[in-house]
Image 1 (cartoon, one colour):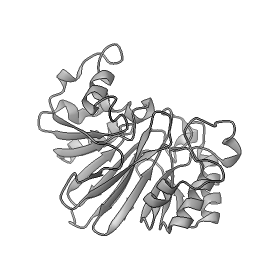
Image 2 (spheres, one colour):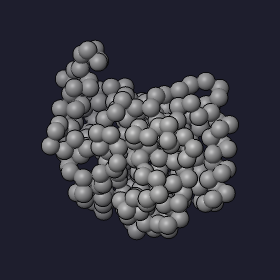
Image 3 (tube, helix red, strand yellow):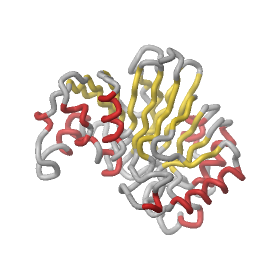
Length: 276
């Protein structure tokens, strides 16, 4: 593997709940999970249902050291964690990071509550991997590995959510989900995160004509995201956190409309790989 590799892989691109069926074959049905490789280092962002397949791939490739970052702990972002096979192997070392509940609940408390009866049949004491829990607060700059800088931001989402900007080797990726924009206003946090980014991955759950109906749910639109990308000088823009009801045909139309407004746009799909 090239020491200069900076790669993004989408293991899950849906929001809210996993979906299946022929109308979801192209873009996929797993909920949020993104793998980012910086040289030999691997990081996972969010533990949606896509984490199950990500874990199987890592075990097949004999990966033993991973960092897992949570944006927040709504079901669609954590449901894959108990099915991440790596946590049951003694050969695995896993750093688990979160900051959205800073001062309210630690990362360890969050994970222990989720993986326990009555929500799950066993407790985390069955896990044989070495799991180190790392708490941070929004605004803190993280350095999980040599040369990797991760800037953290609090996003406008019910209960809070963390946005991440990963910088490595002079390149950058912005992860901005889940977030709700204020109509007629361009969030300075989003603009800062996306400024000159090589890739911005943005919450495009809704169209603008759907926003009034879902006000307060904590999500944004591709139209707003594209405007942010243009203002910020973003090089590539990924539509992400697709609504569970959005079919391949509908997402394809959304992608074409986004590309007409900003040609470097694409709708993220399960198993898609982007080299930065």
